[in-house]
Structures are given as structure tokens and as C-alpha cells.
Image 1 (cartoon, rainbow, N blue to C red):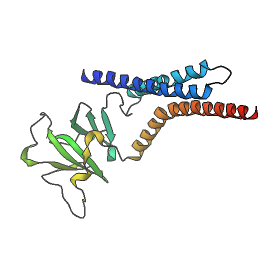
Image 2: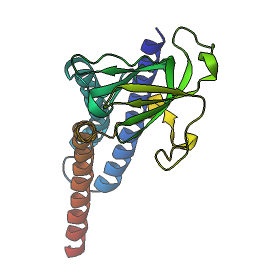
Image 3: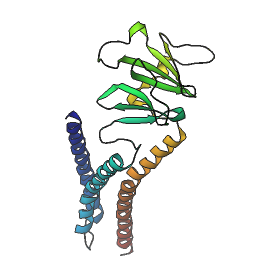
Image 4: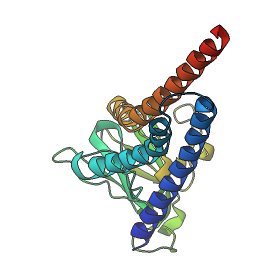
Length: 231
């Protein structure tokens, strides 16, 4: 229920922002076309339509990726699934990020026996370093035994639970390097490439459309200015 409400609010905010951009485009078109002979309504109409059409495109792209592209970033509800070394993946829900867990996409490898939810995480080579949030079946109960951290070797599937992080020549890891699970972004090359391709598909078409419209208005302005000078 809360996810749906959040989605409706985000969609309304997106189209509200598009309305503001539409007003800006119309104002620019009015400045360019003021006193100029020729059709004006179609340029103003384009200025009105381009931003909400771009917002609708972004929403359509988010739905398409969410429903039909496995492993794509969930931009609708904010659920996350980020790749870890050697076929493991950090998975969690946007509404309960403290209950994030590590799973495996490789057949025969199961979940590591973590003592609780993953609250914060980072990666050092094949080693996943994490901080527990609380027990997996509780919102408030801490992990027993004063255990706060874990080291998970994705090569050997060995899990080590710790009360404090080791600071030595092998693991130069501090708490400052740990990031909340919902903010973690995979360091895997394939995941980085996937995010870049997604961003290109999401943002390049609306950006090119807006830039083309403003560029055409600029050309009209220059042409009008040149005509006035010659006359």
C-alpha cells in the first residue's frame, strides 16, 4: 500500500515538474516568436507538449524495465538487487532496506548463513564486508553475542562473524567505508555497464528532444535577427 502511494506521489511530482518546464519552454518560445511573422501556435504547442511527453516516456521506460528486463534497476518502487563478486547478489526491499540479504545466482551456491539483516555493506576484492542491522526476524532485536560485522569470502563461501572490524595490512576497512544497503552500487563491470546503458535509454531521448527544441528556437531567433538587420 505504501509503495503504491509513494509511486503515485512520485508520478504526480514528475508531471508537476514537467508542467514547470513546459511554462519555461512556452516563455522562451514567446520571447523568440514575439513580433515575428509566421506560424507561432505550433512552436508554443510543442513547448507545452514536450515536457509531459518526456515525463510519460520516463514512466513508460521505468515500467518496461521493471516488468520485462531481469536484473534492471527498479526505479518504480526502489527495490534493489546489486551484484557482488563470484555470482552473489545483495537483495532488499525499499520499504525494509535493513532486511537486505545476500543470495547467489549460481546454481549450487546457497545463501550464506548470515545472523541478521545487512544494514551496511562494502566490497574489498572478493570479500564482502557488512554490518548487521538486527536479527532477520525482528525489527529491533540485535544480533546475539554482540556480533556487529561479518566478512564473507565469495570465492570460498566462508563467513566470519566479528564484534569489530579488523584493521590491519590485509583489511584496511573502517566503518566510514560501509554504505547503507539501499545505497550500495555494484562494482562488477557488467553491473556498471548495465547501469550506464539504462541511464542512456532513460535520459538521452528526453534530453535530446529538449535540446533540439531549444536549438530550433535559437535558430529562429538568429534568423529573425538577421532579417531585421538586413531590412
